[in-house]
Length: 182
Image (cartoon, rainbow, N blue to C red; front, side, top):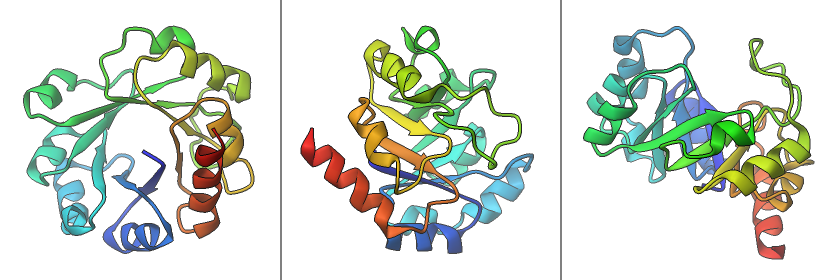
């Protein structure tokens, strides 16, 4: 759970794993299931947890370890039936309470240019509230980098999810240091 790297292809996934990612999440917005499957070939051999964003059918076909679904995404029941790890996105403590999930992606913690349709930033106080309300591990997302990842861990997150910082080995170091200090 420490470092989730959101990537678009195998090359990016390999680079992220070399930088210290413990989870790779194949995230290609507006992709068809067929395109996700094509891009996801080889992810299952990276030696880290492999999650597919928003597409349960692709996760099953690729033999991924899990799927990450947003609040409006369908498929949680199918993911459970297939034995997939289930991640869900939340932006508030209220959304976190009682949600069927194995982990929660909470945010955006800070404003981020990576997702133009993101909810308003919840800040560290919002992240802290989500962590307190959640019954499962929380992964902070949105504007996270090596310079602020430790703050997310100290707010209660079990890890961080990143796009822009996915290839920065200092990110894993910052997360590990913060987890060791907890």
